[in-house]
Length: 125
Image (cartoon, rainbow, N blue to C red; front, side, top):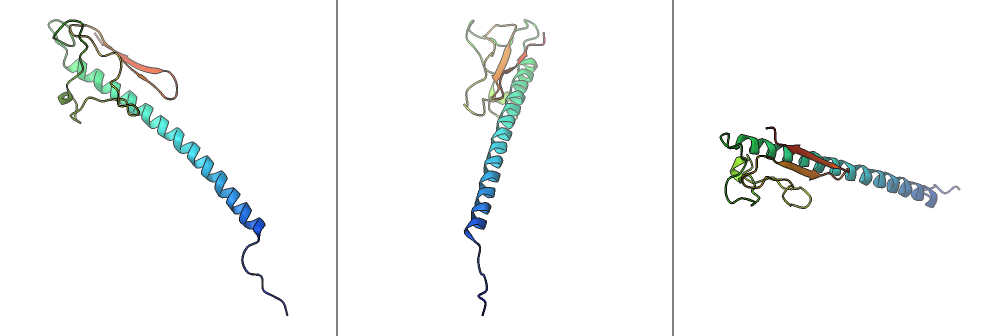
C-alpha cells in the first residue's frame, strides 16, 4: 500500500521564500525611487508656485518684490496660495532658499533635489 504524499518539501518552501524575498527587495527599491521622484516634482511645483506668487504681487511702480524694512527677508503671504500656506520642502518642512529681501528687485528661489542638483527660478523682470 502506497502512502500519498501531502504537503511541500523543504526545498520547495525555501525556493518560494527566496522568490518572495527577491521580489520584495525589488519592490522596495522601486518604491523608494518613485517617492524621491515625487518629492522632487513637488519641490519644482512649489518653487514655480512661489515664483508665480511673487510675480503676481510685485510692486510694478518700484519693481520691488517686498516692501518693509530693508535687508529683511520676506516670504510670500499664505493667502497668496490656494492651500492657504506658503509651500515648504516636503522632506524637511523648511522654507525654500532665495526669497527676496525687502526692497529687492530680484529673487532666485531654489530647491535641492534628492536626485541630485538644484532647481531654481529667478525673477522675470
